[in-house]
Image 1 (cartoon, rainbow, N blue to C red):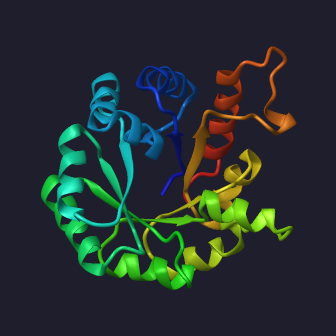
Image 2: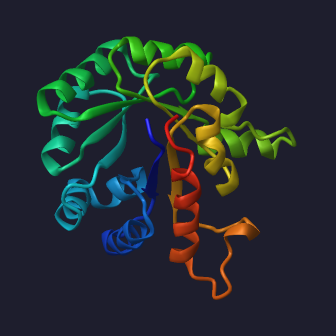
Length: 230
């Protein structure tokens, strides 16, 4: 598939999220994500507002479902989400319930392998249960806790190639990636690229003379889309 750029709206205000999403759309972003902080702050209202503002654009609802799988997926679908996220550390029945709801409501299911003892096996398990996409994810607290001990902070790139080779569905890498690393994900065989928002442009190659974030994001999207089929 061709690379897809997804912006994660990890914001706590729907107004700020809408403003950021509009900028991202102008810059060439393909998918919007109602990040976990936004869903916690705004709930279904936030997803509905994104759907009203951006009809026809895929919206990922990152609720990180652990239980009550069918109901949570159903609610997000009715609010306008096109993709929902279920965790690999949930019970197999929960994953199956999310997949069932996905089939019945016409939405895609993204399985997140965060905290799996074996990340590769976790990804394969999610695929076998019917997930349409795999999110290969190193958690925020995990990364920082390990770094605080003076150890190397883990990266989803460490096992990304192995995860990609283990499954037949598209893979997305999430967790502590720099912009330059995120841009390289299609080269690893992972076509779904996530950019966090609020964005920090931390690579000199993407700094514009006037500090225009939208122009910087447009350059990033062009680089990712230039990979062609992955």
